[in-house]
Image 1 (cartoon, rainbow, N blue to C red):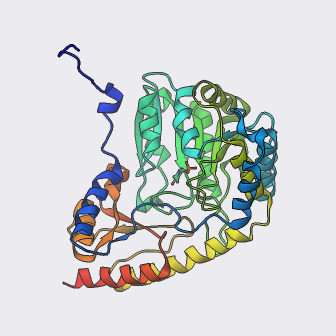
Image 2 (cartoon, rainbow, N blue to C red; image 1 turned 180 degrees about the vertical axis):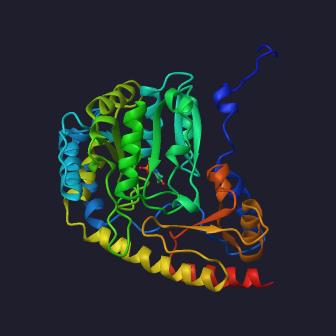
Length: 393
Ligand SMILES: *Cc1c(COP(=O)(O)O)cnc(C)c1O
């Protein structure tokens, strides 16, 4: 073997930002090693099991040998029909299951593949900051240039479209938006979506709306689909996920719905890279989407109680925050004079509580930290007490 042999990562890998949770995990392990019972309010992964009727549907479907072969990369027609039927019931608009929806191996897969289908090297992509890290990374992987749209409290954590320079908009191929929003918990109203349609149509920009939290909403609030807005069907694709709605993050199933050509482009990438989702999982997903949605209402009830509990603790600890109408995240201003990294280190060291530093979601997230409500009320109570204690000393 030649001694000159070296293994070098590609530039796109070398240029990756450090994985947000890797550093936090390292610190968490170190604190746990000291014997601290760490409460993790960092990662947004539902703690409760997938509802039993969905698990049973998988058990049954897994025994069917027809499901053991390669699936269709765009998904079974029956799954796509269950998706469009669910969509029509939920949002009151119809899509063609044969051409306007594609199955995804989790919505992350579709989001990550979207720039490969539509972005040429050098094209700009508008990305919310703070935001789900996949938008910017998938853009860079395709050779595109992410252009950050800061989400500011004074704008309700909606991007300021008027602040995007015309010469940037002219070079922009695609934009990502995400409401209800991770990490801020913000929601978008009809007027904002209408502005996005108008802006995107004017500049010929494809809109990718990430609707992963469309069902996690409280106090009677019902999130909109971007596709409800007149004109959206001509320019947009929306990403839906069963992960958060049905506690199915490990199953990897979702779908993208919207403009036929956008759906087809995503399908072209998928047919060349993956071979679709396990059919037994699609069968179980049909059950999830088609059955009574009681389990979703129950989940929202649980998250709402947790939200109220944690907001009360944080208020008592001296923080000022509004209760989010959707998502299972709290997005909180740092204590006076501390940066986000200091806050997360302080809570870990002094309270044994993991929170996510806001700047991990982008530079504009500096000044905030995120709490995820994906632990039991009992653990949240404990975390709340410890946070109050930590800030006292
Ligand atoms: C969780 C999450 C997703 C991804 O969900 P999948 O499990 O890949 O379907 C997408 N976008 C946001 C903002 C998320 O928080």
